[in-house]
Length: 431
Ligand code: HEC
Ligand code: HEC
Ligand code: HEC
Ligand code: HEC
Ligand code: HEC
Ligand code: HEC
Ligand code: HEC
Ligand code: HEC
Ligand code: HEC
Ligand code: HEC
Ligand code: HEC
Image 1 (tube, protein in one colour):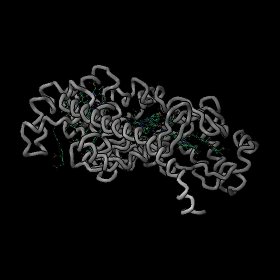
Image 2 (spheres, rainbow, N blue to C red):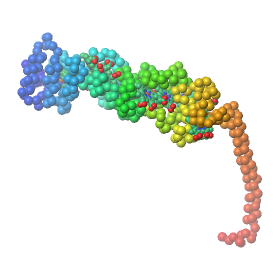
Image 3 (cartoon, protein in one colour):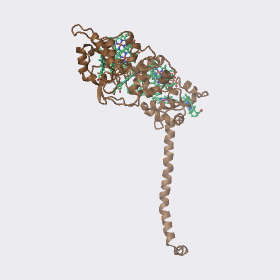
Image 4 (tube, rainbow, N blue to C red):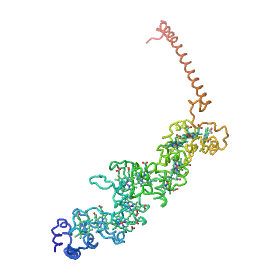
């Protein structure tokens, strides 16, 4: 009767058990007595022992919440299938006398999944953050996997299946938020991702080869972009993207940007400087082709300025991508310094590059400077002296008019004064 007495006197059960009918209550008490005999050699409580209370829909917490929330999925879950015991995860009720305390420790998954647990502990999600009123880890195992309905990622119904991951991460990364001291203020990563080429390929076309959040970030080892160990740290990004876009990665490695970036230069353009990361759009679209000019311009300010002075630059600034954009002449993943023989704008190859669009262009055509600097005599003497001549002409014309007006002024004043002094004018114009 020890157990029964304790249960009856426990304030924890007063509220919930009052509603249970007495027949069931008797059953519960008897089974508990059978299941939990003498303290000395007690075997741990079986799942049936726990389910006796937790399966009973009429038993609730003080606030009315069901005690068995989510347990219906248990038999089909991976842990139900392998016959895990409730106390494998809920360790403290195993030792506690029934009824167990109202507050239990959070479950511990590390006993069986030590690799995942170790990685998670050092990730951004394993760090403690203060959110709202409480404080806890940023994302616990069960925030991504569920509690009693855990399924292997290979199961399409799993929260961590390849196609479900954006939704799972999106529980927390859809809204702009700045929990903790981080920078997660960008308008919802998941929202941006869904609308990107990758989002369309994954969620629209259902391509298994398209990336989800975890392909780029990892699952248990997710770190801040500023962390050198992160897969999305600046230095790691070309390889992260290159794990799928292999041919482009190889071409990029030989380009001026790639060679510098791989050597540790943090200013040379990497994939995400030109493409962005969550909002990646299709490079086939005219809008994208025109926008990327601005991205080149963030680093090559002067080249952008001089380009804007040309026919190509003026037309693209109106939104038309038919004329040459930066990459139309320089290439994209194969950009080389202008003097390198392989460069698309080298002396050797320039004509061929222009001819891709100007099919009838001859050697004279390439004399045209796509980055004109009229103030630089060494770059283009003809342009420089034409410019100088135009300046002289302009100054000359203006000086002449200034002189002309300056000489005319006193004369015109004098003429006006004489005109006013004449009396005949006063009578002929009375006011
Ligand atoms: C005699 C009925 C009874 C038995 C047997 C029982 N529980 Fe409970 N359990 C409850 C009640 C009632 C609550 C709700 C406590 C509250 O919120 O006031 C609860 C709460 C819990 C909670 C939530 C604790 C928290 O911190 O919110 C867990 C987990 C739990 N039980 C696991 C178990 C496990 C595992 C077993 C088997 C070893 C078990 N229970 C056996 C009645 C029982
Ligand atoms: C694989 C580990 C695991 C096993 C095995 C397990 N649970 Fe849980 N249980 C969890 C997790 C995770 C939570 C959620 C904890 C949280 O949200 O803080 C949870 C929560 C609970 C809760 C609180 C539910 C609520 O709505 O607040 C109860 C009750 C519970 N478990 C009972 C059981 C019972 C009964 C069994 C055996 C049939 C069992 N658990 C087996 C991991 C497990
Ligand atoms: C931020 C979300 C997230 C958190 C938090 C998380 N996981 Fe995972 N987990 C995943 C994803 C996504 C996969 C699937 C990875 C894949 O297929 O590459 C996965 C896979 C797994 C796997 C199966 C693959 C493997 O590595 O063996 C296990 C086991 C696992 N997680 C356990 C855990 C445990 C234990 C914790 C807590 C210590 C945890 N996870 C925390 C997202 C998460
Ligand atoms: C007592 C040991 C044990 C505990 C504790 C445990 N698990 Fe498991 N878990 C297993 C076993 C056994 C399997 C099935 C075999 C396998 O795939 O590794 C499994 C499978 C999984 C899988 C699917 C793995 C896959 O292949 O995709 C995930 C995810 C998982 N567990 C997450 C968790 C989480 C989250 C917790 C804590 C809430 C937890 N486990 C607690 C033993 C455990
Ligand atoms: C339960 C909520 C939750 C889930 C689910 C979740 N996260 Fe987080 N995540 C957070 C919180 C909270 C932070 C810490 C924010 C901070 O301090 O800036 C964070 C931080 C991050 C960061 C670092 C952000 C930064 O600005 O440095 C990345 C990257 C990240 N999460 C990716 C993911 C991915 C990918 C998934 C899914 C596999 C995921 N998260 C699932 C809550 C979550
Ligand atoms: C194609 C690769 C890729 C995919 C897919 C991806 N990310 Fe990212 N993510 C990145 C890169 C790269 C950065 C770092 C950018 C930087 O700061 O330089 C990043 C940064 C972040 C950050 C830090 C804050 C921010 O937005 O700058 C969070 C949070 C995040 N990602 C969450 C997610 C979530 C959630 C998903 C899935 C819905 C996802 N990511 C999908 C590549 C990816
Ligand atoms: C898991 C493999 C994978 C990873 C990692 C990946 N991508 Fe992709 N990417 C794809 C697939 C698949 C497509 C869709 C192809 C399609 O639908 O035509 C795609 C499409 C693209 C496109 C559009 C191509 C087009 O012609 O429309 C660009 C640009 C792109 N990715 C850039 C990136 C960048 C930048 C990164 C790194 C931040 C990255 N990708 C990481 C697989 C990947
Ligand atoms: C200097 C800017 C720049 C960098 C750096 C860059 N790209 Fe691109 N990318 C472009 C441009 C411009 C296009 C459009 C090419 C075209 O229209 O011919 C493009 C096109 C693409 C495409 C579409 C397929 C194609 O070739 O047309 C993919 C996929 C892609 N890039 C992935 C990547 C990846 C992965 C990286 C990093 C390894 C990367 N890009 C680095 C500018 C860049
Ligand atoms: C019509 C073809 C064409 C277009 C369009 C074009 N360039 Fe050039 N670019 C060239 C040629 C040709 C050279 C070599 C000039 C020389 O020999 O001095 C060059 C040189 C350069 C150089 C080397 C430094 C220099 O000024 O000599 C950079 C950097 C550059 N371009 C960037 C850009 C950027 C950024 C854009 C777009 C805003 C762009 N280019 C648009 C043809 C073009
Ligand atoms: C994140 C900054 C960044 C972006 C964005 C960027 N570049 Fe560069 N680029 C560099 C750096 C750094 C170098 C090497 C230093 C130098 O020569 O100016 C370089 C070199 C070059 C060169 C060789 C210059 C020479 O010496 O002849 C060309 C051409 C060029 N970039 C074109 C482009 C084009 C076209 C784009 C856009 C599609 C672009 N870059 C985007 C940083 C950038
Ligand atoms: C991506 C295609 C493309 C490339 C590459 C290109 N252009 Fe053009 N360019 C055009 C288009 C389209 C026009 C609009 C006029 C037309 O339809 O002929 C134009 C107009 C011009 C004009 C002014 C109009 C005219 O026909 O006289 C000049 C000058 C010019 N380009 C020079 C060059 C030179 C020099 C190169 C090589 C360094 C070059 N372009 C490379 C597409 C291109």
